[in-house]
Length: 401
Image (cartoon, rainbow, N blue to C red; front, side, top):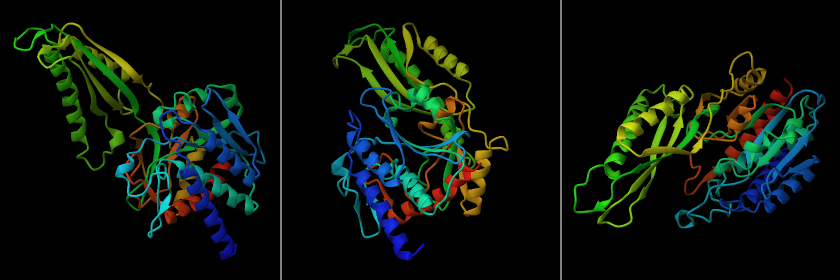
């Protein structure tokens, strides 16, 4: 390929990336119409068929398809999400949906790392593979899904259980990872289970000047102490350099509710915890522990779940998974050093794994400060373009297994 042709492809890739970033598909209450129109335009430019699935109203799932030479084989799914998290615009150096590029080549925008970059890298890698005349054995489906940032409830979670998804005949999936500030690249083969639990402590009300027995405050103190003590034990494990965040259970007190007036002892106080259970945790035993804490705290202490993800089997990284073998060999050939672990947050990969499909989380962004959900999120132009080249090797490798 001539240098001028390469330069044009790079310019097209950056232009498409920036155009996608300028669509403010920000939670909550997103109108995805502009994203759908943009992706339909990309499908036309790539000469690929595109389907829009509407499992729920106003929650489109866009799937572009590159049919393989042997479409009877299970297909490869390249997944990304269209939505991004909210911004505090006054905290940004540049407008968060401007895709401003500074003199260092850093492209500033919400979604530049999480994860509009990956969606465009898939498409631009395929553009180059097609221009080079490559044909892949397995069909490639490139999916763009809604609402991942709020749990994917009306997106991938339900989509994987539809006949439309089953008809895609997916055998392996790639999804998002996270940026790495080091030379290495992060890769994930499983996720912690998300539990959001609310503990409500009911007690005797009264005047604020009295020392009443059986108060909600006494009970909630007991509960908070138990959760925070466990948090401290898990945090202590991270002092071992071999232990990553995904290997421990995280616990954070995220909300406190209750009370009506400063001089009134409340009838009820509620503490809400965000917990991410590492894959080694026995879910039944963990819930039994919470139940026991509530009983020990006193009468009328109850717990309920706002979210309770089931235990999902990790993707196997051994000879039983030929897609992993192909992925790893490609990374080795490219000199990519993988730091492999359990994803500390939650992605749509968990829904794909839940229906028995192996999935790997990988975003080709190294030497990049982790800024997902942060102010001044950016991705450097050169890192973005390098990621396309990486996918140009990985996609054919897994598609020709």
